[in-house]
Structure formats: C-alpha cells, structure tokens
Image (cartoon, rainbow, N blue to C red; front, side, top):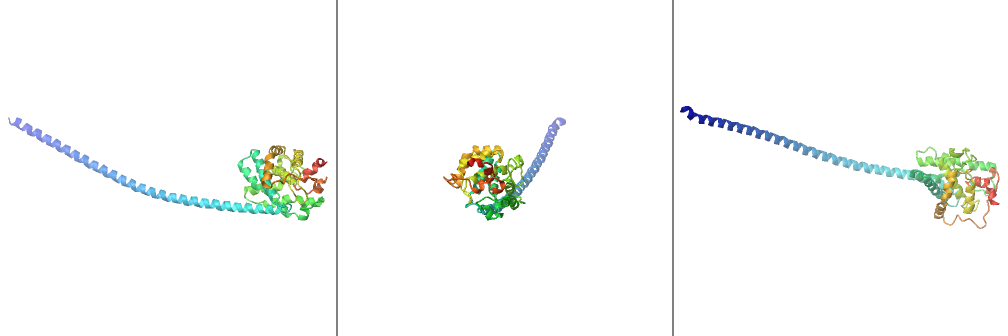
Length: 319
C-alpha cells in the first residue's frame, strides 16, 4: 500500500525536476537571447558609428573633389587664356607683316577660313579643321623681315630681289619654330612650304608631290586665289573667272590635283567667305590688266606673292 501511495509523490518530484530543468533551459535561452541582442546592439552601434565616419569622409572627399574641379577649371582657363594670348601675339605679328603689302588684314582671315573649309571638305578630322583655321593665317609672317622697297615694288623684280622675297618662307618658319603648340608647329610647316609647287618648281626646298605637307598644299592654292583677286599696292584685283583659269591651269603642275578639284567644287562657298570678310572686292575692275610683276616671263622678274609663279606660267591667258 505504501509503495502505491509514494508513487504519485515520486512522479510529482520528477515533474518538478523536469519543470525546473525547463525553467533553467528557458533562463539559459533567455540569457543567450539577451547576449545575442546585446551583440546585435553593439554591431548596430558600430555600424552607425562607421556609417557616420563614412559620411564624414564622403563629405570631405566631395569637398576635395569640388575644390579640385575648381582648381582644374581655373588651370584650364589660365591655360586657355595663355594659349589664346600666345596665338593672338603671333596672329598680330602676322597681321603686322600683312600690313606691309595690303591695306587691311582681311587676307589672313580669308586664308584661315578658306583653308579650314578645304580641310573639312577633304574629310579630315575636325581637330585639323580647327588647327588650320588658326595656323594658316600665319603663312606669310616672314614678310616682316622683307624690305618694303622690294615687297611693294610695282615693277619687275631683279633676280637678287626675288631671292630676297623668297627668304620670307624661312624667316617665317624661324619665327614660329620651337613651340610645343600643335597649332604653331603646323603654322611653321605652312610658312616654310606654302610656296612649294606640285611639280617641284617652288621654293625654298623644291619639294614635289606628296613630299609637300598637305596643309601647305592647301594654303598654296587658297593663297594664290586670294592674292589674285585682291587689291595689292602693285596690282588691281583680277576677275574671278581669270583667277579660276589660272587655278585650273595650275592643276597637277603648281597645285595638288585633288586639292584643286575640291577647291573648284566649293568655289561658291569660297566666294561666300570672300564676300563676308570683305564685300565686293573680288569682282575685278573694268580696266583690268596684268600687273608689271605678273607680266614677266622669267623667274627673276617675279616677286612670288603666291600668284606670280602661276601667272608667269599662264601668261598666255592675258593675250
């Protein structure tokens, strides 16, 4: 009987023990959860601190970037201003040289625009279109070193005088040499070679064909056209149709054939530019005639101002 009476007590103790074990497990679980929660809080706080630090660093970097952008922009502006001033100085020197045998500086403006038009129509990169726009006007900067009594002489030039005239290509190249600027390097090449002729009869080095740099070949033809159709101290402007006859006759002899073709194909644009830069100067005069300097038949009788070499070779056109 006693064993039967004690059995419920033993079961009760077992249940109590199990319950206590459960409570202990629950307490351990709760403590573990508290620890996890504390760890998560610490991680969260660390993350917030790190986030705040990153945001502070980001703000500093943005300030540095803004300051750097401002500095770069200022440097670019300073460089552009310096480059513009440099080009402007050389351009004014070219203008000073041009005033020696022309009443205005319109010629060099037209040469730049004609040249950039041909470069574009030849399909060359836009960078080259812009470069020759600024470089071509410097083609005759070497005239600054030629005595006016020779440069402006209305009569035939003696052989010795013509040799002096020819020196303007080397003088110009020397003035422009040694620059790191791509534009001035291009201008140097143009100044030196724009009187070379396709058949090798030009100066100063007697280059022929594609040995002549393309920019110089381009300037050669537009310089010839503009010189022919412009007023000079020693000549009246020639009519456009006469000037174009001279250009056509020089194709493959004085001028690159491909460049000549592109020039003639775009003559309406050329004339538009001429009108814009100086209206109504290209029409020629009713009493037009070859100038004394163009009428010569030997090289020593010509002051090569871009047109005489071609004019001499095509003197039959005046008959």
